Amino acid sequence: MAQERRGSRDDRQNNREERDSEFVDKLVAINRVAKTVKGGRRMGFAALVVVGDGKGRVGFGHGKAREVPEAIRKATEAAKREMIFVPLRDGRTLHHDVNGRHGAGKVLLRTAKAGTGIIAGGPMRAVFETLGVADVVAKSTGSSNPYNMVRATFDALKSQVHPKDIAAQRGLKYATLQARRQAAGAVVDE
Image 1: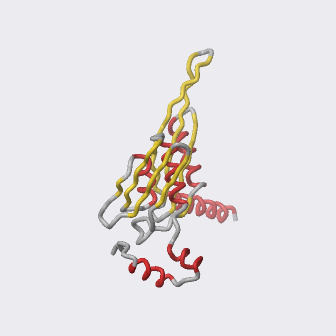
Image 2: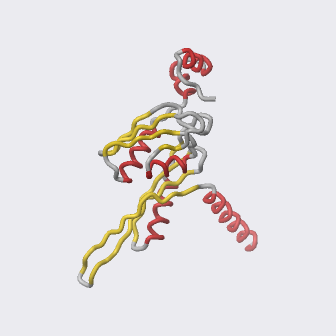
Image 3: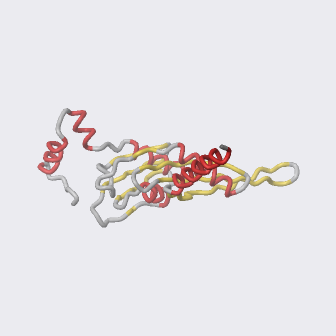
């Protein structure tokens, strides 16, 4: 009986490891902070990590600790807890252009043709790589602070809407909406 319980615990641990291994994590920024105390300086570290599964789910987290590995571990756990789903067109790009903002950080995310690649700056590039986007053009204006850029990118990604949802809201069929899009002269990627 005890062996059966031990076996089930091992199975749960293996399942957790498999679930964690499906995620890709990228370290975006590490910040070192020094606090002066009576005996000298106390060092602390803050880490910003982006985690995604490469299939449309992504999250970011922030962790603080006295040592770098511990700060990264805390940030990774926070990122896994706060994941969002982003609908992707053909699994490679966004459905529509979108703006995002957080504080003084502003970003513009645009769809791109197949083969364009990820044209984006550092913190935004990490988000797209972990999200699984293959083709996107992004521009950041305003603050270049990595925290603001990542949060502004997430603000933009949260407002991504799948055309099927738009069709349902308007009471149309998805095919009708796509036909209107093609008739309007919009570029349709193959």
